[in-house]
Length: 526
Image (spheres, rainbow, N blue to C red):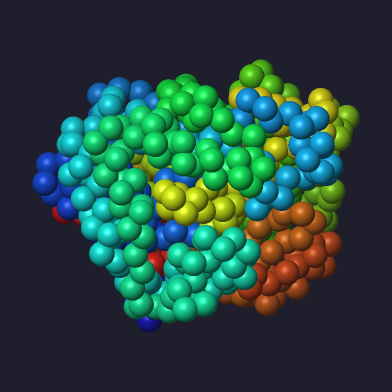
């Protein structure tokens, strides 16, 4: 039974349709579309368009997108709408530009051709039912006339103020009066309203071709970028449908987008966990096991995962029984261990939302500009803030994720979908940069292994083993932290909440939705 003294919200229940996002205005926009007869795709596009306006440091039309769509009468489909590097982006060209070890997030070379709008338009073309001008109506209104800044958005905005201050055009828009907006203050982006109107009228061509594209390319070139009009024109067709990858977990099937996304890492963690009786473990053992499985999965992710053509066969290999058995055997339940690849040799911010409609269609969608405010590079002529996803590329010749012309970088953003016996049960997702794959496994384990409700599973204390540190939220009990330290984990108490999440679970005709209490959003239905 829910503890109503805990200050945590309970799950949301509805009988017909539901939308869950990390922002109340986004959820409201999606619910309005559902109430007017729109389907899951229409509602998702309305919600993400609003979020690109009202949560500008987390997402935007200058970013990338992935989705899993489960039509009521068919199999789960995966959409890859991640952008590609410019045709001139080679290791040699970037080395000549002075980059030798990594691509800084604010560099123009961190900006691949944005893929989100290509993805939105493909989703709408193939599965939408309402016209885009109706779908974008609320987003356009908020961009043109302003919207009130919510508390969590205001906090994140202030935390990234110094970062955004480095670009004069971005700081002029996002730091009015020289500071981040406070909760309840209004903010507007009229140029973004113009871009949404163009996309509603002309589809992807309104973004990737013509005058708007020419202005974006000119600005990127003025920063030293290698982008051309041809690169952007090709970007209009960048989004495409792909076959999801999946694995079983205790009678369920967990679906993820294939590489270049890191969904494979989530499946790896789950397969490792399945060899343990997680429900019988103590909290200390469970956090420790999850940390060790995460370290192994991410070690493989960083060494091997890349654009699909550069890691052919990797999914089948890493999810094979042989590899999983080897990885499980490397876990010592009494001590934290350094990760290693299964065959030993080494190779040298975001929003998520989901919708279930009255016809049984479900969508799991994630849209991102990577770092807070992405690259911070804003084109003053179009109002487009560009993402920083190209910072994930490596500058190591021969590395699977090395930058190359037309190549997509390894992505952290991953939507998820849970099915059982061929029927969709839950679209779900976790925000939070690198945490996402680890978060997918933790959320599903809470629900499936521990029998938690959707909202309770989200609100449980989180931890994340990454870069040699086990970060834990302050809600994790002190005795648990001490026991983990004794096992060799370097504990760091998180200064801000670890990630966010949304999910909608269908069971016996009832929808149970949750939206992470760490964010401003909510799940609503009818």
